[in-house]
Image (tube, rainbow, N blue to C red):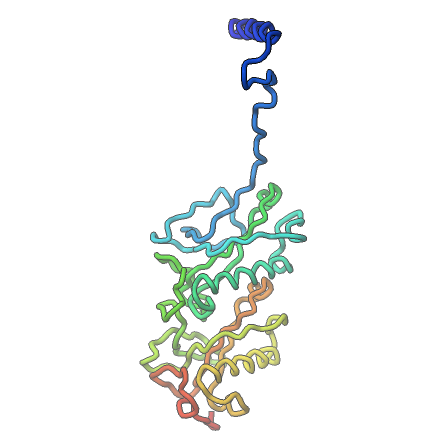
Amino acid sequence: MRRWIAALVVGGAATLALSACGNPAGVDGDLSDDWKAAADPQPFTPPAEVCHESDYAETAYLSSYEPVDCATTHRLETVYVGTFVDAAAGLSAPPGKDSAEIKAAFAECDTKTKEYVGSDWRSGRLRLGVSLPSTQAWSGGARWFRCDVTEVTNVEDNGDTAARTGTLKGVLKAASPLSLGCYSVKLAKDSSIDTMPAAECTKDHNSEFAGVWTAPETPYPTKSADWDKFHNECRKVIAKFAGVPNDGNIKYRTGVVSLPGSEDEWKGGNRGVRCYLWLSERTVNRSMKGAGPNGLPIRYAD
């Protein structure tokens, strides 16, 4: 080490001696301005259109970030990554699950997911969630949110996450194994719906998915009067689906099942309500889409 220092000093002296005669071409004699400034460290932002073996989580930790090829078995797909801006970006911690910022993020995820899968994701066996960076990552400047989608075994009976292969991109542009269809509603002893397993539309069934009603900013339904409002709106969806008049007789043509997400999802901004027609005292063996008044006749006895 001492030899190296000594050589450096001698070299420096030689440089000073030469400088009296002028610097070589292209040399300004100032070593301090020839280094590029180091770039500021940037927080990690996850990419979109990648899949994961792990289940959905509200917080996505960098330590557990292990994306996989969507062609392999996985349980989650990130379809879009957005950015918190303006006041949301100035928060000292990630926004709370029922905050205005989360609702805005969910709305963006909702729109982007519809575009990604080719239709309203609620028309399939899919669940959408917003995943945020950890508190530590937020402190380090992370301001992203992930729009994560999972396939589920069913949406009517609180189905489990399903392992799948292949991307969800465009999966609902046309009829798909993921598309919601017909069902066999089974009642509990108190006449409430117990289960509604999927059924082939060409075989006997008594219920069918008709579409989605987007609710306004309103409390989650808890009372009969709340549910009546939901049912009335879903009847409009059913009338359009089946091709029957949306009038006072619709309730004599079919019953209705209104299915919002969980209360937590509702607080987080999910206002989509799945609507199903329900034939309480008979079965059919065809789809009721476009069936018209003859397919859904008025039955006052119902």
